Image 1: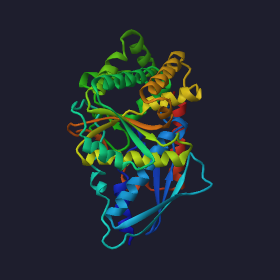
Image 2: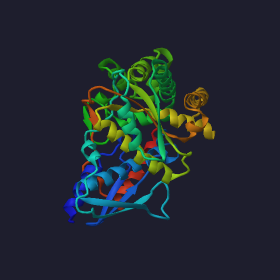
Image 3: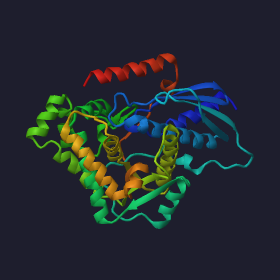
Image 4: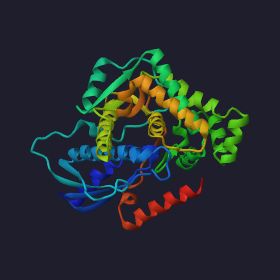
Length: 375
């Protein structure tokens, strides 16, 4: 095997999903059969990365995507997390070796670039039993899928999403994230979310862009103009009801650390790629898990007391919908259904910009510190 093959593997693997398109990984090619993945999390400046769990989930998706991509190039990837590295900056050694003669590529490789987020309303036709069985099989024996398909169930999950949105739209800790991750006037973006992929109409986008110009504008809109009502209706309630089902991916036990989160990320990516392969569209709905976790752990994630109260309400609602045990073991939530693929989407940084170096990691740390200072 040569370095060109490694580059092809990484060029495909980089299409793994990550929260807000943060791409929390950099690649170091040590040899034609040895890749080092230098990962990082965004817990110190991103409200939605509670204890680094969202980033760790993304890293798990990246590593699973790398395995699948390697299989398409006739290689088997053996991956091990390096001991002694901090959880905020984990390091993974990837060893490649040729697959056995006649071994087939993982069929999910064809869906890696096609997989997108669809935030607009979907069809309400139920997911076929065969497709649900295929999706359940894709995530392996250590995770299970819970389905919520009736109109009443979809409405309850839509209200949960809207309740979570009330929190994120009214606190400054979320404002800084939203301000930084949206690429305005864009259909595609290499490192952010293009506004045309948010699922909002043109009038809503203009309003959002104006409000996110400053935290003072956000507060003014929320106080005097009913600022959260329209976006929650358009981005949470309507699409939350207009789908084939809501689902929860639940671990066999409450995740206990980074290795469990990475394993969950692999299961989530196989689920998502399988959904793409059978013609289904998907939107993650991760924020209820985040706010429920803050409430469960008693973490004061904001000085806004009303938001803290709402987080406890989200925790209680999630436990009611899933059951207390499943709520603590849930690793991913989403809505799924039939419909057209998104016409606007996040792209990925070019592979050359994802190369590891001490200077690159130092720049990432400096950027995180700068974001904290901009609240």
